[in-house]
Length: 220
Ligand SMILES: Nc1ncnc2c1ncn2[C@@H]1O[C@H](COP(=O)(O)OP(=O)(O)OP(=O)(O)O)[C@@H](O)[C@H]1O
Image 1 (tube, protein in one colour):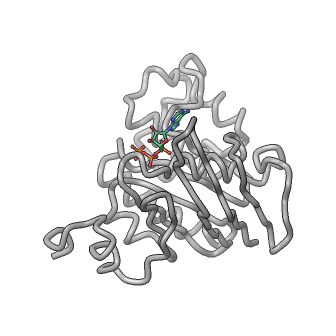
Image 2: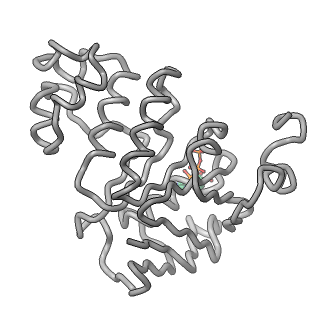
């Protein structure tokens, strides 16, 4: 499937945040989005998901305009920066509620074996983030929008999530944004940079220097 969002005009009050932004996500590909703090990455993901409105935007699925918010269709899942599983909920209830296999999760992350009855609040913030990322990427949605999934994860968890994403992209379109740009460069098949309210398709790493997202020494 091909999901596109086009012609975005986003204002907060008189301030224009995004203008004419375009983004494409396709089954089989991971689309990375980079940008400085405040460049509009979270807003872009929320607009795609449909939980944020703008003056103008056009969403297309397989080249056909799609006018309803994507979240209402069940086709998209959005991992926000805030957690979504209630802290009092038990781990096994959470997996059951979101229809994701806890057995497969504990097979990949054996340290969670025997924690089925633990409440979400009993896990560390990084463990909670891992649980939520796993549930989100293993949902039935065909478009997965991930807002800073790596920021609270230890390196081994990041690598495991990246491996999972490479497998899951065979059946899903994935959009991912994070300030851990090396992981985004590594994981992405297609890359966009948000700069001055516009999206730039990045063809090679040095473009990130040319657009002054990175300074020349950073890539050495
Ligand atoms: N609800 C809101 N009301 C007013 N301004 C907002 C609102 N949400 C976001 N903004 C502004 O829009 C701009 C883009 O915010 P957004 O959170 O999309 O950026 P971001 O690229 O995800 O930033 P970060 O990397 O710091 O998370 C920022 O200047 C922010 O202050």
